[in-house]
Length: 285
Image (cartoon, rainbow, N blue to C red; front, side, top):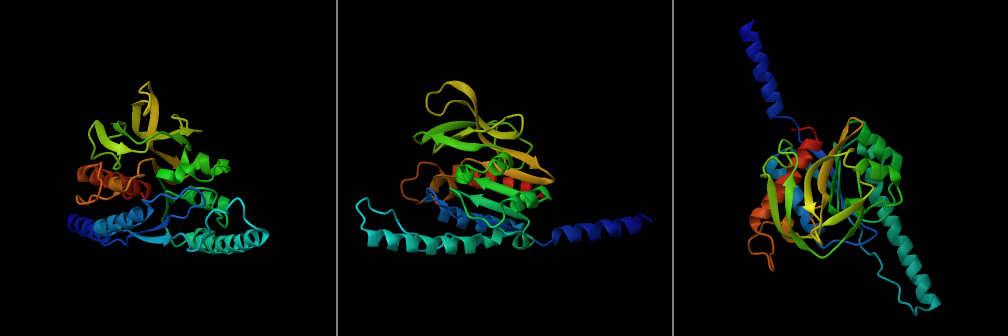
C-alpha cells in the first residue's frame, strides 16, 4: 500500500511539473491616451512567461493607421476623408478585439489589460465578465483603470476607477499582504524613485484586498489611505490590479537605459510584482 501511495505521489508530481503552461491574452489597444511604455510591457510580459514556463502570451495589438487629430480649420473634404479613415481604423480595431469574444476566450486562461484606455469596442462586454466569473483570471496593469469609464460592470469587476494623477514622484509603498505572491518578495515597505501615481474613485477598501498602499498623499503629503495595488475574487475568478507601470524604467531592468530614474533593482521588483499577480490570478500559487 505504501509503495502504491509513493507511486501515486511521484505520478502527481510529474504531472504537475509537466503541466501545460497557461494561456494569457494581452490586450494593449487604446482609444484614449497611449502610453509609450506599452511596447516595453508587451516584451516583458512575454519574457516573464518564457522564463517562468508558467504561461504563454497572445496579443490584441493596436491596429496600424489610426488617424491623428482633425485640424480645427479642416475643409469639408478633409473632414470627410478623416471620417473615412477613422471608420476604417475602428473596423480594424473591432476585428482585432474579436479575440475577446466568448468563443475565442475559450482558448485562454486569463486576460491582461496592459495600459488600455478609453472605450474599446469589444464584441460581448457581459460575456467577458461572465467568463471571468466562471473561474478565469483578469490582470489589470496601470491604465486598465482608465478604461471603460461608462461601464459600471467593468469598474465593479476591477475594483476601482482612475480619477487623476499629478506629476511623477518618488513614493514609499506599504506592503499590506506579504503572503500574496505579488508582494511576498517585498519588505514592509518598497521605495520607488519616480512613478506616475494614480488616484481613484469608485474604490471601496472593504471590497478588495490591498496589496500596496500609500499612507501619504502623493502630492501634498497629507495622511490617508491611497491604494496602489490590490486583488479581489470575482465569482470563482480572480482579479489582480496594479496601478504601477507608467514608466519604461519601471518595466525594463536594462541598466544602460537612457535617463533612468528607477534602478534596475526596482524594475526587477516590479517585474516580480506583476509575475506574482499573474501567478495568483491564474491560481498557480
